[in-house]
Image 1 (cartoon, one colour):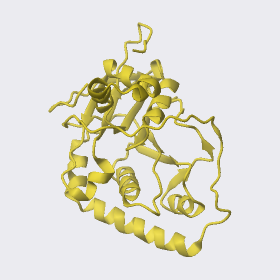
Image 2 (cartoon, one colour):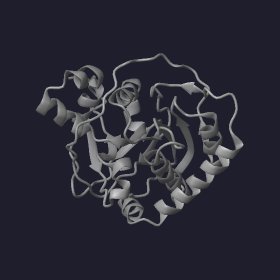
Image 3 (cartoon, one colour):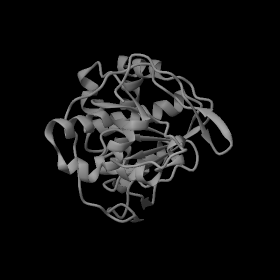
Image 4 (cartoon, helix red, strand yellow):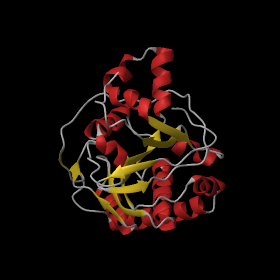
Length: 263
């Protein structure tokens, strides 16, 4: 569904407990074309291509991240983002997929800064796990110094949400969202929240441009719209456009009494 100006807080079930998931209060739908990647890889053990971290680069990057977090925290974008969020009644671990190179590019640093500030601000945000196959040993060390855990396995997004989980995935490939949804297709969709690209945008791209690439690689993304709610975020500054444009929250409420079908 497209974003609406007002959001209700649905109740969902995990195990035998009722829990209320975090919902933003308002947003808008997106229309830009998505970025697609088609190759698939099997899950496999992963380690950075570098043998050792570079202490000088590590120190420089750590300071850049601290500066970026400070910039984000004082921004109007962050204040508006926080104002959208209602406190859930359950703790949620955070999994960050596809963060990109925080050493080479500012958008990944801004995205990571937002995730770290969420953990600091909200008591319901639990441990943060991070993965991107392009991470260097230096970046991995900095991530750990910032309180994150770097995964040693490339899950290709196929993490089963056995407990309430926030998947933080701004600007990931469509296939990665599809892998995540496929791995949780059914009851486990109720255990997860996704912050990432607009799924409505993918649907519009298929409708307007007849994109067979999206249809072939993102079937679950297209199908999940029938029982999900999407709420976009406002990017009010050019400083944050590259990192967060066309991003929003996704909440899932499938009818568990029927078999979930793909389009």
